[in-house]
Image (cartoon, rainbow, N blue to C red; front, side):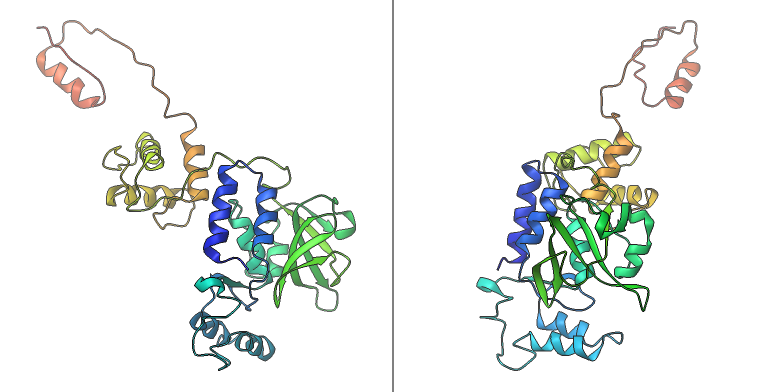
Length: 311
């Protein structure tokens, strides 16, 4: 079983290789096989403390709470520490999720945010989907979400990821493989951004306060061109750069955390839209100005380069 750190590093390498979103989602789902199901979880580290938190939530049913405890050797009393647990391979953490959280995290890794706090609300939010319908109409090679509809309740009871040719990876007990012919899968939905098997955008690292390097410098250049004060273009992500990022996130309907991840990079580059190109410069000569008039022009146009005054 892969650790969370291993999966994160694999995803970064796949992005650097220029794989498509669909390819990355399939490979990440396969890399997460065996990770534990915990009702309500959305990719938190698998620890006894986190399991206890979800086990004690008021909305959880007794069977799900029992399962959370049963699958943790610390909580069920079979061992005092996590060492040796299959969800703690080689002393490294895996992550916990339910079926909805598993699918949500898969798409988050490729810059796609699926809205909704559960299977039904996610399905019902049409802003998530490019296409959706009965599973009988699902293109056989399409990487997409699949759902299980319960007619008696009108709700979606379970979901997973179709990885092609009728094969599914979903989280039920643990992350595992399945088939569309199993578990009564009834519907499919293609997330916006995955309707075409397009290559991932140029990969850029997630940067935050303390980061350094070319990606920080590029981010500062864009922000400055857009009118946000980063304190300079030096490739060092300091407090002024963090505040500039947060101001940009605030005005572009992003989570305001001062961290430049895939969604913030996408918005930055879209807003930039070529503004980092060298601007066209013009020389204008204005004759017969007084010294006061020339100084007034310099104040009015601080970015201009007024180099000489001749009385």
